[in-house]
Length: 198
Image (cartoon, rainbow, N blue to C red; front, side, top):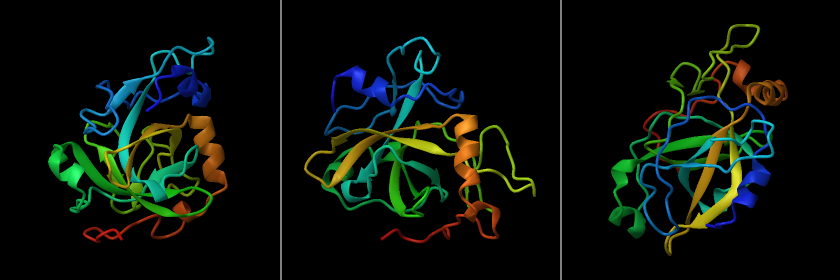
C-alpha cells in the first residue's frame, strides 16, 4: 500500500460524506484487516477530506474496479474463501458480501471488514439502503452508493487485494441513481441469501 497520502487525497472528491464511518486501525499489506478503517489527510480546505475516514475490504484482484461506484447487494453470506492467508488470519473480522458495480451491473465478492460501519441491508429491496433514508418518488428505499478508491495492496501471496471504500455524498448519489433503474424495479439488486458466490 502506498504511503503517499497525496495519492489518497487526489481521490477524495470533496463532496460531503456521511457520518456512518467508524474510527479504527489501518491494515498493512499482507496482514489481516484488523478493525478496518483509516483516516485520510486534510484536503485543500473545501471540507471534503478533513478528518474523513475510509473503510477496508478484501476482494479478488480480478474483480477490483478502481474509481468505480457500487452498492452492497447481499446480507452477510455464510461463505469464506479457501485462501491460506485468510484461514491463518482472524477471519471473524470479515463479512462476506456481494456488491453490484453501477453502470455495468457486474457483481463481485466483497469481504468487508467487520468494523466497517455500513447502513442496514433491506431484505425486501435486496441491497444496503441509504443511511439518510432517501427513497424514490414511488417510495422505494434508495441504495447506499459507495466509492471504490484506487489505492489497493496485495494480500499475501493470494489473489486477494486490500481495498478502500467510502460512501459518496448525497448529491452525487442522487445523480448516479438517476442513471440506474434496477433498484426501482421489483426485486431490486437482491442476491438470494445462502447462495454461494462463484
